Image (cartoon, rainbow, N blue to C red; front, side):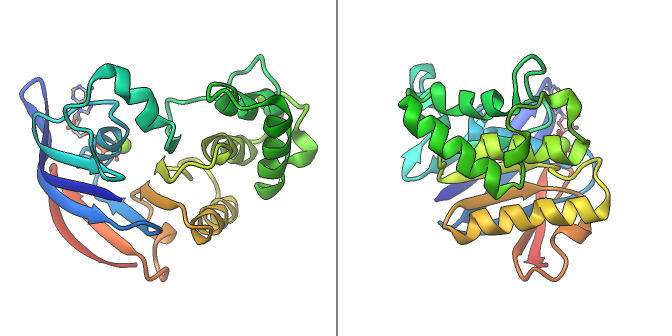
Length: 220
Ligand SMILES: Nc1ncnc2c1ncn2[C@@H]1O[C@H](COP(=O)(O)OP(=O)(O)OP(=O)(O)O)[C@@H](O)[C@H]1O
Ligand SMILES: [Mg+2]
């Protein structure tokens, strides 16, 4: 589903990812961990083609994406849902509208938009907040809306960067249950975090990064 072969990313002379080789199989839930600056976010951005690598090859769903032309990037991204810190909710739109936008950019019919948005809000436990605005929601609720937006169009891959960042352990556990639920429906998930609690005792693969290099792999 995702394959990196000898991938390197350099920012202004600073190596963020060095010669990374790994694969993620369809339907897996993989964790990426490592200290601050290790390259976790960079790895996710390479999958999403928010940045391009200097070296190596990246294959997503059977397609080479490392040297992809700009006009092909939207089609790649339609298959990928992202929970990134810099992808905030629009404060002037309701929860319903924030989630619906992710389908509207994919030209979905309005009846389908409504059905899928409501079903997804139900899945994250926020159906009753459809008409509220983001500012009226708690941090954990807002994060669940971000997840709803990432999954509403049924992507084949979901990428999450520190998805439980500022949340208390109980709320974080609720967020992880949602990811588990999405994964059990067959969606491939990659989660970057330095919070051990997220993967401890899950039995899932954990890839460790250190200073841009893959330093090891084990199971949570
Ligand atoms: N846009 C950029 N320009 C220059 N350097 C960057 C840029 N983005 C990341 N870097 C550098 O690349 C390295 C890896 O950064 P990255 O954001 O991938 O780390 P991270 O593991 O996600 O860290 P954190 O846990 O703090 O989020 C760091 O040294 C960082 O300073
Ligand atoms: Mg990061």
